Amino acid sequence: MNLLTRNTDYAVRALIYMAGKAPERVSTADLLRDLRLPRPFMRKTLQTLQKAGYLDSVKGKNGGFSFLISPEKIVLNDLIVLFQGPVSMGDCLFRKKVCSCMRTCPLRKEIKTIESLALGHLRSVTVASLMR
Image (cartoon, rainbow, N blue to C red):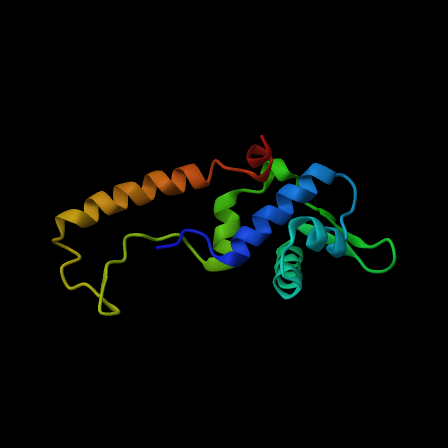
């Protein structure tokens, strides 16, 4: 199980980089050069962040991206949900079907406890806190 997908990872890396440059606008070219990320993924990632209301963009010679939401208010869990959907460890699957023992499984309660702890922590991590 991978907790983060490539798009979520790229988004977090880009946001941390941008937070270090804030309040300046950051160009896609700077992000690509300094983070060494593939252009198609980075463009899609930045567009998703813009559409979700995290970033503003300006086109043209002095264009680039800047924050609409402060890095202190951008939460890791929200980014994960945006790029890959809700975090869930509690859906036990067996051969791509939901396990028939879900209601009586003694392991399920422990997995749900772990999921709750993980979600609590993911909701406390912000882009600003990742910079420290």
